[in-house]
Image (cartoon, rainbow over all chains, first blue to last red; front, side, top):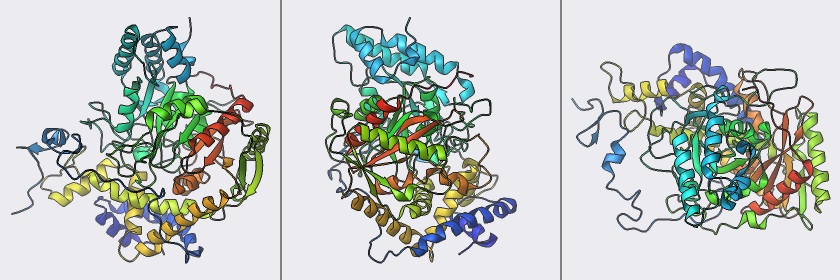
Length: 100
Length: 493
């Protein structure tokens, strides 16, 4: 499978990255090189195995289901959460108008 | 007077504890060395005050007769992928330039609690994506090593290139690294130092800028196996804030270190003998076998049949996870925001991300987005995850015949900066020997083996069973003692 300029334009839109024509043109052969190379995975017989997502068979740990189980991630951190926001206003993240 | 910058972790810790010198003297020496080494571009920001404050705290504790901690009085470099409270954390990207975390990563906090101080935040490949440290928004890191008879700037490897350069140049006794597909081991090999990626989950990922979450793993980089064992002990441990953190006791790796390998079987995977591997690398592999045999181990041939498929599987899985992880950089919550005149929310996202990400990062986000998109998910992503299972199964089968695996860390020694930039694929091949252990989540270490005919360092890699960092460190120690690697780069910076 290979990609053309239209496909790369579509992917860049899905990925929310602006790309002009020149950038798209440049990216097409680069992505195709990589995609051609990963194509070889198709020749591997994978009929016996399940897809692997977790490498170490250890149970995922869940936190206790209580408020503020960990004070760092529990909540009540509004000012910390907003400290690096480019446009925080009135205790909220600021964004361009989305509703007319 | 002792030149403190020649000392490693153990010597500094023990010297401070026994009162041979103060932690403050050590911190001052390293701060000055960092200040004088700007030509390496290893640090994005220096934090001399942090190093001094930590040192003074250790000296004060000693005066009161208190415990100084496993890293007491040791100033280290912190890869700029770890969130540090109030100290800019960028992942070497423009999109996070100026980001000041309101919290401390678990690993860095553990190191400070163990008495370490911070010399500064170390440069890296942008979002840890790269194998040469040429994708940083803050410029290339230069290796302190040069080819004999040349002054061409060489790559320190990547992505932990600031870490490897700083430790090899002796402007930091040790540094943190992170390894997703070789980012600790390959730079360690390129610069003649040690680095260990522990079992996936040993070190918490909380507060580490995410690249590919099923692979990312922090680890130490230092100039000796002992120093790595000490620092790993301080970094590891269960963290409830990371759901994939291993809930297991941290062994006393330093205390149990032993270079006696009697009864150990070392596997030599035949598939790692690949076309394009330097003859000097193959020679050092042979020497490595002889060293481990001399230490009492038995050498056995093993097969890891899916080795050649590990790298292409990695280049689907890692970009897929990255495209998802990096969706958080939206210009709203932190970091850069590019809001063109009259733009709406979607335009702002796309403009911010176009401006804030470098080319390699964009390339991987696009690949990841493509392989996860409707219609391609099974052909690419599910297939890669199945191949990952086969790569892991290869190791499980090999463990029936051996306890550890010995292989080269990289197919070549370091290369001049700028020499591999024409084709992303050529760069990816640097990690061909490192990636299989990453996909399988296994502990793996690079130790210096010697110099090639150009006078550049070569590394040997040891891969162990899950949770057997001790076996990896022990075999690393056996090689270290026999290779007697004492070479240091000649100072030109």
